[in-house]
Length: 551
Image (cartoon, rainbow, N blue to C red; front, side, top):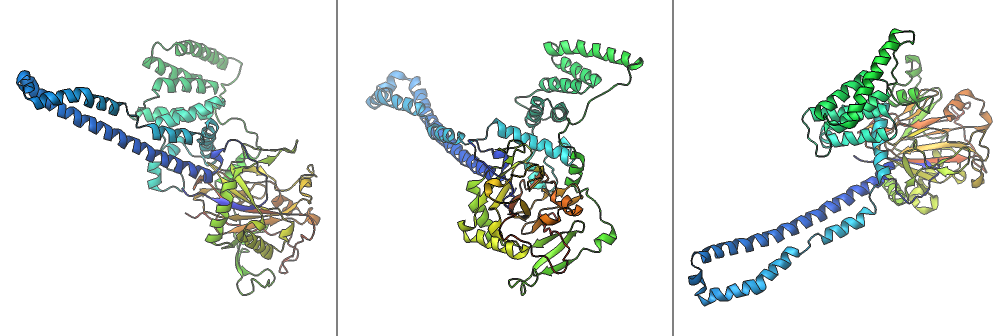
């Protein structure tokens, strides 16, 4: 899987931490692949050294076996030859000592030393848990089933990749345990059922058996109110292990509760209730958000679609674009969203990645209550900041942004490079300081943010869209494309403008597991003014973006 980058002009802030939070950035996870590759090479060297040592021992043993067999037939005659007597003395006095040294030689020292050094940079339990929750997030958001994920047949993945990317019984069991540790019995059930299914189909496991899986299953379905199923799983468990103490106690308890439940259903207590389903959610618009993630957005009428065009754009005959205008394509009408194609070159993208990768740190959000920068479970990415003076390429891109948008980049924040991790996403957020956050950018000595520029630096095969729940707009990532939304502070009463200015989010990425983007944000200060498009003087904002999947 390639990884995806987004280049942004300063959106949110980052912080460094002692731990790398590997699962939040595919860019850093690629380093782990090379680390593992080096360890495998070191392990092979150790195996070769051990095999070489054993081969020498085998040859020595074989030679002596032949010699001792011949000598045993006539010991006195054999030792009657003075050469044989000399060699016997020599073997026992020195050669067996040499063999002892060979056997005691530790060929693992180099490998163990290498492993010890590399383990300092290995992922920890938080990384494993974060990656596990990412799979559950993809499961829910895109309405996948556990078998689809376990078989590796994710949307956008090739058949060859699917065959290499399967989950074992042990993997499914571990995913269920992660959910169980969060009292998420819905996902516990899903993954334990998948583990049991794979065991029943003949897959073997050296560490997990059906008894352990059924123990988790019976309790997780009981917690969701499915007493009859809890009873069935417990009975099956006891068939496999009649001495299982907890299951024996649970069986009696479940039978009692089921009888009690049936009596209540027959009486006036009401209907039977189950609480199966996903855990309660903190996000009110979760359903609409996930529908948009799946591409189930607002469908334009033919009349609205007829107003969307492609054109060459020169930003009011800007000198740089009169002869070579940029390609502009309408994607949305209300509010107006357009995308620009081929804004950067491959060489520029690679240079930006090269500059950003060493600086990537877990992305943070500003706590609306305390104002403190902190990490958040709903932002799975790492970010780095690039200033115009750091490299000519950064300065060139800054200038290109200014030429196309008509905004003065001297009043913009630094460019922010974001690299998304496993199931990377960024849930509903605002790029600007709201009315209850008047001092959001006080430390920068600027006013509020008035525009955001978003440039995709890699393709994503599935997922990874930016969606606006208020208007139903979906923007799919496409490499080399860019889009931008902007707000005139003096026209903030415009309803459609407020809707675009509002909450938006990056949807979880399924394959090509990250999205790389470059983002820039502009602030109210100094000479940062908008140059309106003369073809539409009443336009309050313009958005540039990409709307397509590309492998």
